[in-house]
Image 1 (tube, one colour):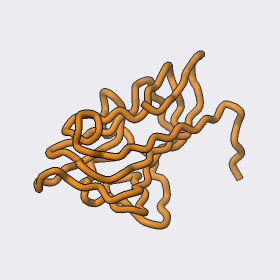
Image 2: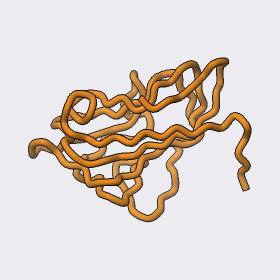
Image 3: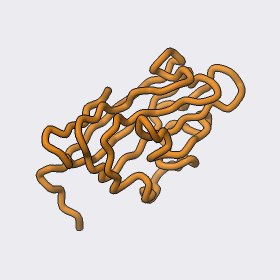
Image 4: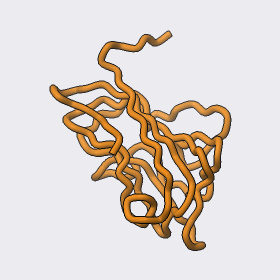
Length: 144
């Protein structure tokens, strides 16, 4: 059994996409502002409403950090993210899934973001949760 330590924190971000800049337009979607160095113990998403795309053409989304946009979750077809599915890799799963190595035990010092490619994501809701511990004085993670 794993016990929670006193320095373990949880941050959560819920985003409803509408295709606007920073909310699903091609480009980045700010998820978490990171201050200092942190240890990401675990990170993953959950789809609360089916993602949709503005135009046919395969809108995609990934989850990473400023300089490595697929650090945590590889490029995923937006239309593959349906309500009730966990998003921890490029093939979302319902009910239960083992957390892949790339979504746990990662050191970062950059903001966490989603990256939308090809076409805008203009509908749907994702919730991303990060479990983290500080690695430097004053380190923090807050939903962006």
